[in-house]
Length: 313
Image 1 (cartoon, one colour):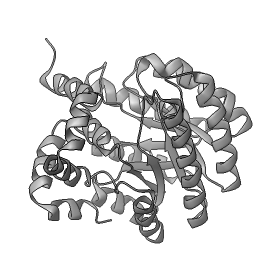
Image 2: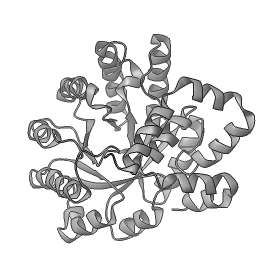
Image 3: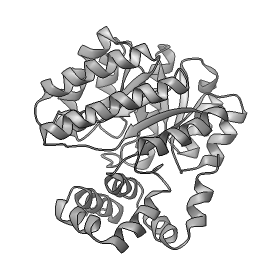
Image 4: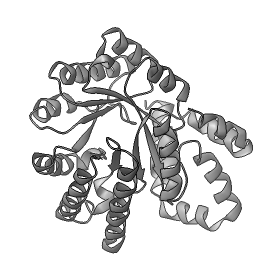
């Protein structure tokens, strides 16, 4: 029988992509405002300016940042072009603030769902822009049906632009095999758990550690993207964070206290920031990833102070 947590995750994944529900939310002034309030725990705002303002604050405090203009599965070619231009401007803005920042994106936001070749052409343009600004361009992993195309595009791009990285989901059985091949490419690898587990929690942590261990032992650039305190303590024990090729990345609004402690210990830390009109999609994904975030969302709708506390780094 399917676990309730998995059922919730599947439900919110479906809600996130249901255009009728999305349209209803957008047309309801009251509901839109309430849900936006909840989303602000995880999202900087609806505009690039809001994302840049918070990124600047974090950079001055000693954090590295990764920014993303939210969106995925775009099926309109004109919208894909607009998204590519938004990422172009984002790279310029964050690059003007500081070197060694990151811009993240879903390839399906810039054409993958229409034609993989479109997303490849746009990615190459963005990779060149990012190279000029000393910025890393991090490709997110999406549904398993897109994995082959995403990995293929990544490999072609990073051979020319080593500032382009890729995300690997530890919950997928295929990930261990993927890592063996990806070690031959120069781009940074971001390791996430993934929202929809194929393995148990204990097996998940073991698999996550195995992947990170391979990357660390091979001195490969790696971003350890997790909020799991057990995993983090184990990796601290192994002294992974003391290595120059390793960083810790956490989502904006989740465990800022833990990330602050890690920074104060001298570890390289990065905050993953998002912005855009598609915040509804992102909120649903955060609840799907960790269903208990639904309770937080309800509290945040009623108490803006709870949101503000989650933004204190």
